[in-house]
Image (tube, rainbow, N blue to C red; front, side):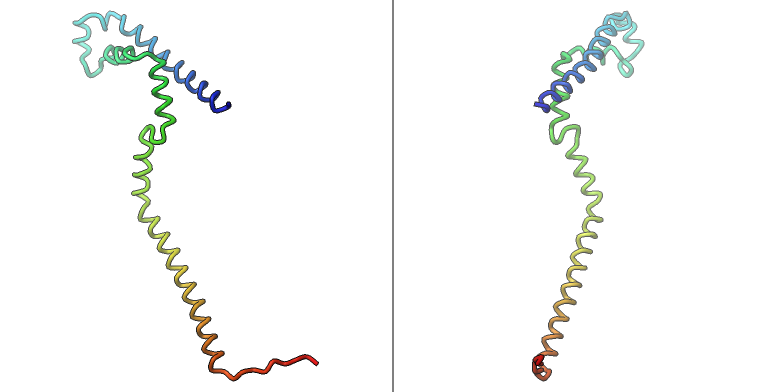
Length: 136
């Protein structure tokens, strides 16, 4: 229930911000700078806000809101998976050093305990048996 409400609120918030952009783009397209060919030739395509406004008007704001929401909720949205991959590759040497350090420490500790057990067994094997003293 709360997830549904949060989803509706997010879609509404995204829609409002995109609706404002859509309305501003509609105003920009009606300006004389966008309607006149000579003015758009002077502005040039590199800094052409009219082209950007026409692209904004090409899709309704509700569709862009749904697409933005899907991108936000997709597990690899906004390039998240590639960021994880890059982060993993960059930290791989440190992770390997940590794993091998832990393995080496475990190997040393297990070797010492096995060695001490063997020494005790040898000592017990070559020593005289002790009588158990009973308390009278």
